[in-house]
Image 1 (cartoon, rainbow, N blue to C red):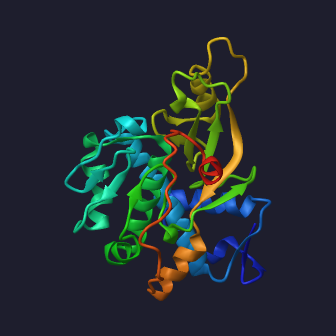
Image 2: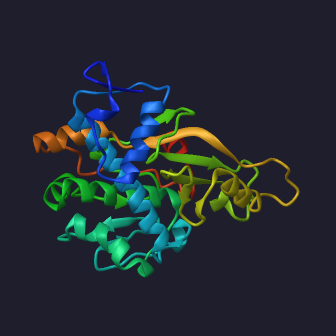
Length: 273
């Protein structure tokens, strides 16, 4: 359910401008979890960002980017420096907004694994909500590697069965073949129709995603892949507050990055590896 300033939300209080937003709103209102907001404007901001995440995921699915483990990662050297670990470091003098857009515009020059794909989707979605000027102020030191993300995304982890469109969930493949460790699991965006986008696999239902991963486990294994209760979300409230105030907070220029070289890990695994 949805609450605005402590009161139950009425569907007539907000008319979504987009069918995807409408589907998200219905799912949130039917949810057993209480989703609280200070204003209709704050709720509208989250709906729009979730819609953008879904559209960015679909755009990536339709692009020519390829799936690759870190050692085989590729990027456009005009915008990014490819590090020895397989990460993409924003080049000096390049606008962050231009570099993120280029991944979609010149997609054939890029290859990366599924956790990195989720972070790219987040940046792309936020860019098209808050605009180029604020985006470039907030995200000056982008480094794309696994789940590494700028603090201003406010990435959060949750354990829940209550998935919402725009969430990122994790399909675990516990008996993956050691010869292809990149298929230890799949990070995937929940789409508005209940399907999922996973980079390297595509848009599938949960059952289809599990069947695809089961084909990539040890030949003798009977242990099925499964959808976990792990959910990753950006901090919608943090981003809303920044956008509303147009205020740039001090953030560290250098961040500790876990270069563990493990592809396709969940956000939980990245935090605790």
